[in-house]
Each structure stands twice: as structure tokens, then as C-alpha cells.
Length: 234
Image: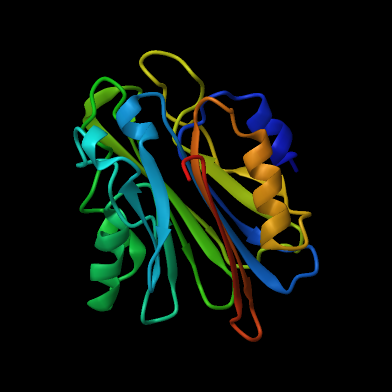
């Protein structure tokens, strides 16, 4: 397993990242999501808690130039107990298809990567079931070719205690930004609580590019949630 803190420290711009896993004591489902930005528009954001999760919003409304790909609900807890976390408005796509009795894959087959040439930012998504099992997916262009959308789904039905899987949007910090490659990285989850994990992740995200972070631990027996939100602004 990789050390996620070391992995992040070595990459100045992984983009947006999702971590799903299980705490070392095997009692909690672990969810983390962060956003980073290189442009003023991307950096001008904060996470705000909602009744069912979180949303992104402009920190300074006067500086917001294009909200189309940066304002969305990254995390929603659905009525059927699924927790959905994504890097775009596909959160709502998964929610809507789940309400019709379909699985998350059904919804994502109607979506593709973001239309932000030349990067064609991948859409990454995670779904956590009430028992702690989880799925990750990525929709990305074929090596930067927008004529082909590649859809990959990874499903983990028996997560091991003290471990998780991490997926992010960009393989490395180049222009244009290359999409994430390969399977989600298997990483150690050693933090005993959401606050500790949030402190570790925030400390190892690039200081210039990090924007916001969400971490949640969910007790698999009681359903009790511990949530931490960190914003660079405010």
C-alpha cells in the first residue's frame, strides 16, 4: 500500500481527488474529497455543508467568471443510504438514476469527461454503500482524443481495515494536463478520526494549488458521522 501523504506531497497538482476506505479499527467508512486549482476562477471556491452533503460556492462572487464546471454538489447522501462523491454535477446524475432504481453505472453511461479542451478533465466518482463497500469510476478521453470516452468502474465489496483506494483527475502537472492512468491507488488509512486525516491531507496538498477539503468518517454500526471541512479561503 502507498503512503497517501507522501504520494500527494510529490505531486504539485493531482487536481481533484477521492479517497474511499475503511478505518484501521474496521469501524468506520472513510471518505475524503479535495479540490485544487491553477486559475483564479478555480481557486475562488469554498466547500459549504448542506443538508445532504456539501456544495461548492464562490468565495468572492465578484470574481466568478464561469460557474459551469466548478459549482456543483460534490457529496450527497441519497435516500437509499448511498453516499455519492464526485468532481462534478454527475453527483446529481447518479442521484437521479438511483431514484429510478438504477445503479450508479447506469447514470454514468449517460455522461463523459468535461468539455474543457485541451485538458478534457476526467469525471471521477465514488459511491459508498451503508455496509462500507464502495465503488470508484473515471470517465476520461482516450489519451486526449475527445472523440472517444473511456469509462472505467472499480468495485470493492469487502474493504480491508486500514486501507482504501484513491483516484484523482490528473496524472501530473503538465500542459495540457494528462488524465489519471491505471487503477485507483491502494493506500494505507491510519488516521483514527476525520480530524486527523484532514490535517494530514491538507498539510501534504500543494500550498499554492489547494483549495478545499472534505473528510467524513461514518460509523458502520450506528451511522454516526464525523465531518471535517477545510477551506483555504475563510
